[in-house]
Image 1 (cartoon, helix red, strand yellow):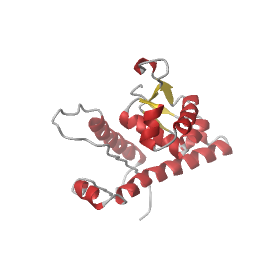
Image 2 (cartoon, helix red, strand yellow; image 1 turned 90 degrees about the horizontal axis):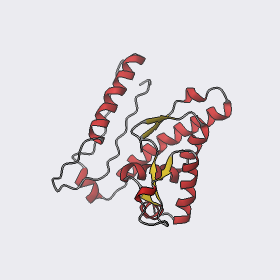
Image 3 (cartoon, helix red, strand yellow; image 1 turned 120 degrees about the horizontal axis):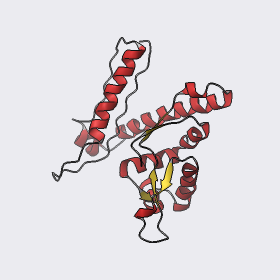
Length: 190
């Protein structure tokens, strides 16, 4: 996997990512690194054949690739993400109403996915929530910004995310679990 963020300009890639299981498979590969089909099936509670089908779709869009160097024998197939992340803007799809509709739907489904992860947190049992209650957070703020200032804020926020994501994990015996962090900053009216 490269550290680069891929700019998506093909509506077929957005359509592939819009499927909930394919999106989840991409997340699992991002969080846990390369996986076999069996490992992915176990992590997503899906049948191996179903996962295999969706991996083919992701592979056809160059979102994932095989990692043959990880295989212990010829039958074992490992998969990894091709790029560190994906970006798109609906403006890249404005030339054609059909692709613009795909981009708009993908944007909406992406937001639904993010909100779904937060809602799942609120649905966890009380013991798990109590364990994280003093550290799990939400934050919001109304700011007055120009488009250039909002772009600068994005760079700052992404730099904080990168600093935490790219750090060397201490060997201190503490258990670290996946934590989903997301941010949206959009012009709005109160």
